[in-house]
Length: 76
Image (cartoon, rainbow, N blue to C red; front, side, top):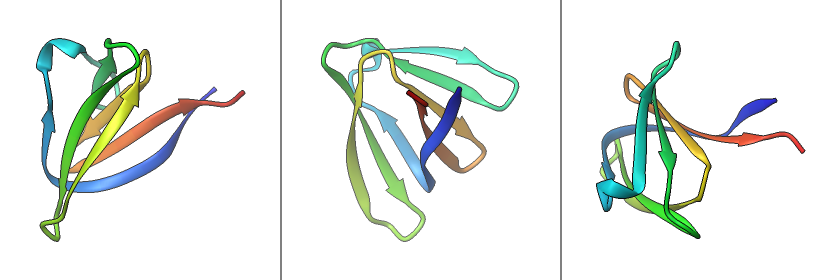
């Protein structure tokens, strides 16, 4: 079962080293899957202007819908 373990409203989002990500369209938004071992990087600027760098483990998926990013995980 997949769930959102972190949800962030963003202003801009940057996928660093774009070749480390695969992109697909899902029924809820755009899915980005991390392809690099051990992790790929994503830079998120929130609506208040603060920026934060996230390291997404290989094979983990990020869902982007409108102005919200969902970091997806799986229940164990």
